[in-house]
Structures are given as structure tokens and as C-alpha cells.
Amino acid sequence: MQEEMDRVVGHGNTPTISFMDRLPYTMATIYEVQRMGDLVPFAIPHRATEDTSLGGYHIPKGTQLMFNLSHGLLNFRYWKDHDKFRPEHFLNEDGKVFKPDHFMPFGFGKRVCLGESLARLEVFVFLASLMHRFSWRMSEEPVVWETSTVISRPPNFCVYAVSRDQELD
Ligand code: HEM
Image 1 (cartoon, rainbow, N blue to C red):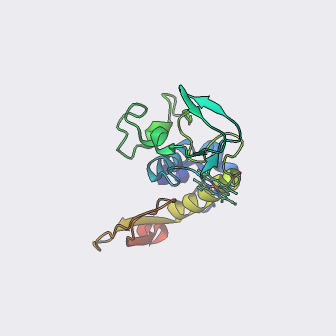
Image 2 (cartoon, rainbow, N blue to C red; image 1 turned 30 degrees about the vertical axis):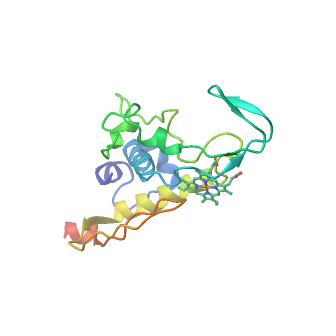
Image 3 (cartoon, helix red, strand yellow; image 1 turned 90 degrees about the vertical axis):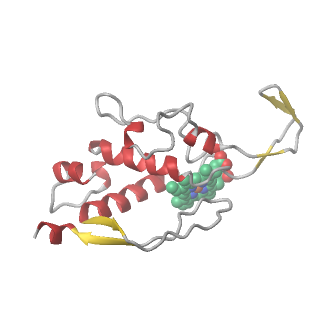
């Protein structure tokens, strides 16, 4: 990401949203974080508003339904090295970004996440700026895992942020 941003954005500049289309590796990294982060594994509970059927199963009106979004994000059938962090999962042979249909971190259909466009911009600006300005090193502190419920939480961890200006000095 840093190599790409140094080349496209430039050292003294800020990676604003106007750069999004020109930073394929950065975008692919964000998608890979969302894939492996699997933030909302079962989306939000829904309810069938009428009798229907799906995959041969009868679903009576009023049934509570939950999507298994993790199925599309983490399944070994869909991703080469599904359990490895590889931004290349979202880059084609020409180095262009693509999003497979089973990549649905924001859900899908009429009740897809209402904040998707905002979240996409926010995550880009936040992550790209932090990566452009700083390098990150894991500390030796132990990682503390906690149980997640509806939303997956990362474990508590410590990192060092080193200003890249300092690194170049
Ligand atoms: C990376 C950040 C985010 C992720 C991964 C995410 C993911 C999701 C998912 C999976 C759902 C359930 C969709 C479904 O049931 O089919 C959802 C619903 C929703 N999200 Fe997000 N979300 C994010 C950020 C946001 C933000 C920033 C906002 C508000 C500004 C927001 C507002 C909502 C609302 C209002 C719903 C309910 C939509 C409805 O039921 O009609 N989300 N989100």
C-alpha cells in the first residue's frame, strides 16, 4: 500500500477519495480486511413477510431468517488460500480490482447496509491516511481474544506507529 501511495499520491499529499480509482492495491487490501474481518457474520435478523420457499425448503410467513455472510467471505470453495490474508484475492491479472459476487460484507437485497457508501469512503480515508503517514509494527504484548456476538471484534492488541518522515530521516 505504501509503495502504491508513494507512487500515485506522492509523499507530501493526502490520499483523498479522488485517488480511490487509482489505488487498486490499496482498495484490494481494504476488501481483504473486510473479507477476513467478517464484521457482521449473520447480518441482521430478517422475517419472512409471506409463505415462500428457498432451496427446496418451505418457509412459512413470520419465520425469522439470518443470512450466513461468512459463507461467502471465508469459504475455501470460493477463495484460493481462503484462510490467508491476500489482497490479490481482489486483483485480476491486469492488476485491476474486482469484487466477486459472493463478497457481501454489507449484506444484500433491499435491506443491504444503509451506510455502505459512507463506510466505504470512511474506511478508505482512514486506512489510506494512516498507512501513508505511518508504518506499523506489532508489539510483543500478548494478544487478548474476546468472544464476539453480533459484530466480530478484533482482539485487543498493541501496535507501534512510526512516522514515515522519521523513518526516512
Ligand atoms: C465497514 C462498515 C460496515 C459494515 C461491514 C456493515 C455491515 C452491515 C450489514 C451486514 C448489515 C445487515 C444487512 C442485511 O441484513 O442484509 C448492515 C445493516 C445496516 N447498516 Fe451497516 N455496516 C457498516 C457500516 C455502517 C455505517 C457507517 C452505517 C451508518 C452510517 C450503517 C448503517 C446500517 C443500517 C441502518 C443497517 C440496517 C439496514 C436495514 O435493515 O434496512 N452501517 N450493515
